[in-house]
Image (tube, rainbow, N blue to C red; front, side, top):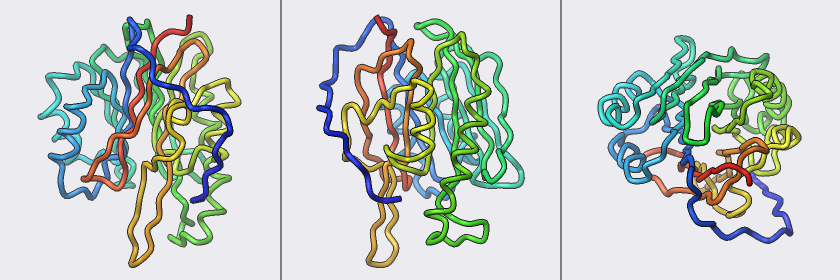
Length: 254
């Protein structure tokens, strides 16, 4: 779970911002975060066009609407009553169409979202998800590191069936696994490209300090379909959550 295999391929240098472009971010906000202000300020300063958030509780939704509602004309949230960590939201500068909740897959813990936005690139599908964490149903994280891989594979396969094949798509969220994870690989098999791994193969996006032990993982990913092209991707350091947001700049493939 915590080891990452690095490709021998050379890292790409960031390219000039394309015109038109779409700046996107995925950010697990942490439902228990004490400092909402820090996360809100990070989103403001990064100024993405589309933000996918996970663990978006009612408290988070209210804060996002109040602080950023003027910036994002489109906001769509889901907040399952049976799981406080299952809230999620899509924030968009552009109009949102066809938003719907994707039910939890067998073995999954959280539902997902799909929507189409009217972006400068044309209509683009946005998938926002939070795959199963490395834990058993009873909370055993030692066994869960191994056992959660198969539920995540089922989850991502079900989520991907919701995509329309004739529209570009960006899939992002908390995969709860690194660059070489099985769910990430399934998305790549659909000819999607993982943005961050092209520009940075080392920076972790999640950490947990438990006693003297510090765990870390590249749990958060942004992937895009073949019609699109990523010109830059990076991790933005954050302090309010146990996750750092990942941001990518995406244009049309020439």
